Length: 151
Image (cartoon, rainbow, N blue to C red; front, side):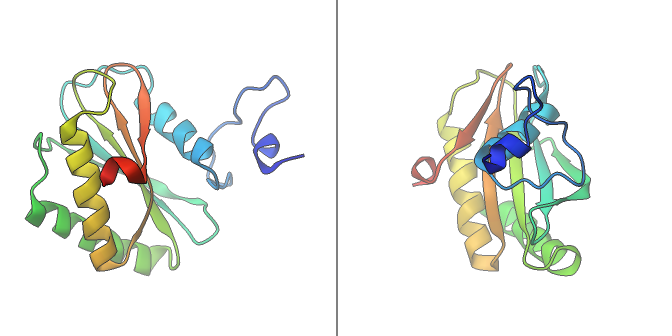
């Protein structure tokens, strides 16, 4: 039995997202992003932040940051990552963050999404907080950004 099998119900449906379910794989994090996004058609941009502890368990807080600009601002992104770094150090030492950028528009990776991903990851490296996933969601679907997308 694989680790993923432990996270799947007998009928093949992903197990419910609960505070005691670790988020160890990319699929687990995509399940989380799909759960948060639902089948939505966002009217404004929101960055959803999930903090994971050192055992990959989610903290019981989901932080929405609303009304983001289409393109990231270095100063804003750096401040956000500094705050998240402090949060992880204080409440989840050795942990990480997963980020879902939900925004209006089509469900494909746009240049603006790539800019958010790249700037977020660069700022995270500077303040030493680990970004486990950066996911983008538009009208109806969820797509993980890869390290290649941030290059």
